[in-house]
Length: 257
Ligand SMILES: Nc1ncnc2c1ncn2[C@@H]1O[C@H](COP(=O)(O)OP(=O)(O)OP(=O)(O)O)[C@@H](O)[C@H]1O
Ligand SMILES: [Mg+2]
Image (cartoon, rainbow, N blue to C red; front, side, top):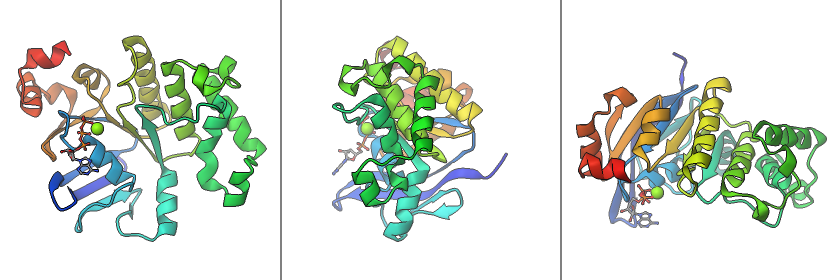
């Protein structure tokens, strides 16, 4: 087993000195792993993702190490580099709908460009070629020049994944990537995430609402409850009792959702 790509230690986040959204969270993710984060609404899953991506600042004493580098409390310049290493995939895709699929994928390269160059959208030929390849890879060859507003949800999410990948990320964070998709489109997206973690070796940390999907696709599952990690193990180890504890509900209710 290689070194961990992501190592979180004693991560806490208290919003406005009130809500303790994360309490002393510690876990790691290594190369090639697909790790799901599950837990009921308000458990702290999105807060965890926002802390990893540094959209919000955790409490003092928290540590998040990405590829052996501490990312908490670093300079803005270094933070820019950390953000390049983390590809983000969102529930609502976060695409610019009036632009084409190709242009949206290229947006993933902006972190590598100067402000002037990005303002003028002067992408290199190499980046355009790579964006095309990624769209081909995700079955969107015929959709490269479609406006994103005209794509289906599943196609939009594939553009979102291609945009994350063109960053050459060391880690991909997906906050509810399939929550807006039907089961068939969800399967396609999860199959791609699995392939990315396995064949490209890029670990994916995926926040999921559907326990069954987490059980089917994950190498490991992190269960969160009230801001704490209450389970960290393989799908086989996640017994029905443990699922019920994480969700504070009857197992039948959860699996019926
Ligand atoms: N910006 C904020 N300011 C204050 N409190 C917040 C903020 N964002 C989240 N919280 C609170 O922090 C807790 C964790 O929220 P979070 O969004 O991380 O949960 P979640 O597990 O992602 O839930 P869901 O499954 O509904 O998306 C909740 O109690 C929430 O109300
Ligand atoms: Mg959330």
